[in-house]
Image (tube, rainbow, N blue to C red; front, side, top):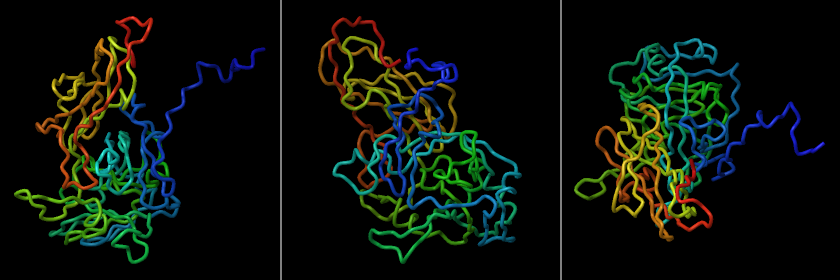
Length: 383
């Protein structure tokens, strides 16, 4: 008997190809990147979804977990995990992107995790609308911010150093907090949240960069004054400019329009005079993707791509373009750019005042076209 042939219990028909492994950017705390070149579905498998952590994953028991709500409210409240599951649920498909995604492409190099293309993923989330919780406690007039605090904590080692351990916390304005799609999620892609993604409860703030979607939420504080926490004023910030001058640091918030190319990858070798399927994804913040264009000549000529699937606010849109590669071997620069329904188009030039965040300018991908002996010119690749 040939030992290389699987038994009936593990027949080839039942063996699924393994997911491409996530890319390690940091071991502890765990920061893992989605291998963007493996993009092949609108929903990112949970096993590939990128992970961004500032501190180690806290250990939380669902039996003893309590969500505390306090501050500028009529009725302070504590809610158990079981009670949250019994509340009316809301489902939202949302693309989550780290505000530092694509940082590796910046020159000169800036500090922070050196994400390439994959600090972004798309999932289906189920949870309780934050507005449902706020309505139960009675938000008082004059409220400005809703502060979301996680159970994860640690010390900040870079200047200015924290005075001991601090917890991760971010705020969102009152109007945003009352949008139905802003939820306290307990489910991801049809399963309970994994620990690394915020079990038992995490915020999902559609249209905003990932730093607002606080994981392991155990406290919500309603505030009548603007929140001035570390990740609101010292980190995840950018310079606002007026008349060309930087005026003040503002917190990063809404996602800006962006398209990324999954394939071809940087320095990928392509066969000459053949049809190659370029593909990727595009996303934006409080809007929807209207079009994605590609250039295969370094930005001189742009061509429309085919948008795939149905458009959905807050979720990325997959796209594809079948490129007849040049007959002449050589190096070629391909690019992609997106435009959303508000008419905002991805910029060609980087705004230096964004520091190490909001990296949305068009990324050139250099590829090499070679002649392949014995291949038919009509052959298609990467389909």
